[in-house]
Image (cartoon, rainbow, N blue to C red):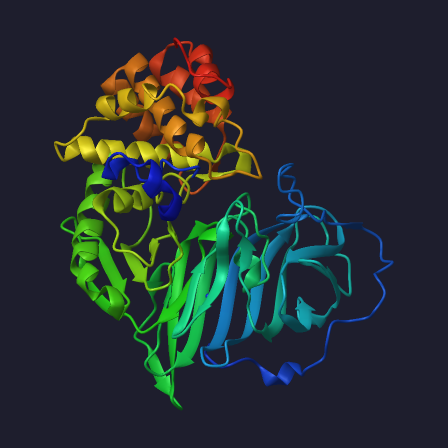
Length: 480
């Protein structure tokens, strides 16, 4: 993610832009009826309840325990004029324990019916927790299928002091959908935490003339019927829920392939039509270059979307970074595309380790500048290191704070940590490490300890002092 609004005040070059403290084939399935939430009592069947959170101490109610999602199939119909969503979410999961009941994350929206393995299930709502009680206890290790029919008017999450507006954001011609950190629950029931990754199918029906964009690649051409168009998108690689999107609007598109042969799709709202060609060209060029630096591109396509919603940030939605209401420059595109490796393919297990996403993407901006023959990473590092009074020295980025998650320190000091590591172990070992790291943990989840251990393994050096100084000490490092 890049916070464009706040960073402009602190920027000294276009490469330090983040220097601020910071988804129908039909319109629903009427056969499910219009029943409201179940009032059935909780099951008394043997077994245990899945936890209401996945175990992240900083976001204790995010995600859910007791199961692992393998796949989401989202059948979504949206009417921009009425701002109404009607949907069916089918979720394939595996029980990690005996489950008499389990939770999904969903905020707002009306749930009509839920079935588990084809049988009606009882359910209840409390806050953003949707508690599901299947007819029979689910045995540990057993795959199971959940089908949720729901609808209503989606509303985004508003957190002005920290994260701004995110989730499903209705716009005049559709929707701008950017969900970091926990906004997926505003438009589909989910295990909404990056520790649980899954593949996705999207079937999105909108009025004719509206384009529906989602992650991955389109499965066939759009289908038109009865004044509506249905788009089918498939992301066959594992993805965290906050990267899922169903962005809708009247977009201009440019499709093709990068010089290395990767499918490339750029989209721009007519208000930003002048940005379309540059977005397409730069996205292809930068993706191909990062593939030589970080290892093979992990997904099936690249590109980006510029919408006219003034979000004030960009977000690295898997395969389709989103740029909210501005024409992105090369540094921002480089940042969001680096996230396809760092954050998307390699995802964090806990939010406190966000520097593994943002520090790496920020350092990628500096590498792009260096590649272009502009400021080197060393020059950018020294400029930031010379900012003696910067508040980032009081904020150790190795443990991001839940009330200030996207602080400048997580980005800039996180990037500086990588440059300090490069200085210590040398260019060849450093870049070999990055490629080995993305290969070892491809499509998985990572921790800071795992990265440190791998850096020590590849370099043959003891690096505890360096990482302690840069990631965990609330002061400006004097030596490392």
